[in-house]
Length: 559
Picture 1 (cartoon, rainbow, N blue to C red):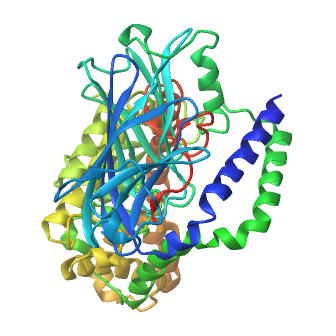
Picture 2: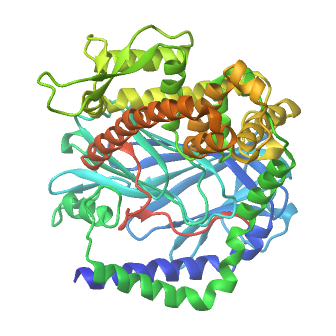
């Protein structure tokens, strides 16, 4: 039965994708419309219905309308309304997708489909637009034997306006606070997080949605929180949860290898014949990649500390434009910087009887002079339990128990870097992840980051006098750690300066132990966050899973 369900789900997903998307994918992705940000507010009513309001901000240059497909098998859609910066739109009963641009301008309507409905509204005018549209979902929350709950898709895969950053906030209409004591939360289909914040549930992307990403949120609420109109007394919400967890990153999925291979094979067969038709879905992403790559190739070497020494800004730009691959690398870079400043020191400690190999301990010597380093120093001090001596295992244990504190530190360093970049007028408007979104100042700041990485990884012309007399090589290692290329850079330094091998070997040894500390810290945080997320306490979202969702569909955006 499980194998049949998995194969059926795979076939259904592919057929929906092909059936809904094939007619519009090529034309939609060839268009240059782009919704940069979507903010969604969900207000849950006492009867289980919800008022959903979406705020779209983006650039619109082609097409006649925007639309959102929604499956209505177990829900209802009503009270659809739209407005933009110029005011409300007129709702029309007989919406026709073939109407002209002029006839759709300032109007909205609903189209019935085989799967459900499409919420449609005219683009109205080209250029930068801010749309607000609202609709009511009946039976958003349903009553089950053991709990009330929902597993709902808010953002469809393969929208023509991707890549897109999204934030979803869910709140109770009567003001009841949603928290870990009365609600369990999970999210699927994207790279990001789902959390409790000030009595509401918040899910947000940490990487723009692209291609087959979606946003699905699952809520399990205590029964006394509301009285859903729709009751499914023959079923427990645990069954809904189990289906959603299959193939997810939460660790509760079915791992039957035969089922998985069969499903993949079936999908491959179905997609094989349609590949040429759906290949246009990558056009926009390829355009952005080509644009960013062309800029990177035009940048020359940069041999100094970038961004005026603001390592948080460098970290933000490196992550925003794909120069480094992991947020947690900022911890390793800051720890190495603190070692360079003699704020931290690795010392050998022999066992009391002298029978075991000496071990290294991290000694916390002095408070550093920059804000991000101080914040990390305080975390290390807490892990050392006030002794000033920190063992690797103690840091791992502390990181597991206090993973939210460390996640917040990593998130804040990136946010601080974004704020600093914005305060330098780095963006043409307010944000973005494309070269065209940057001002001349912003391009110059980004060029410093790209140029330094190039210099570290490609240049064999480092001036020995400069890097050794000014100790620039130690600064270089901090940034090489931030970029994730420290091992390669130190090996290059050894090749360039064989007469410096003793000091480089010593430093390499220091880096390896530093790596052990921050990497163990990172792994502990990841493990704790995954366990908390699986239990419904919030945390990282799962890219896979989410099966059995309500609402949603495939496609949407502009046409």
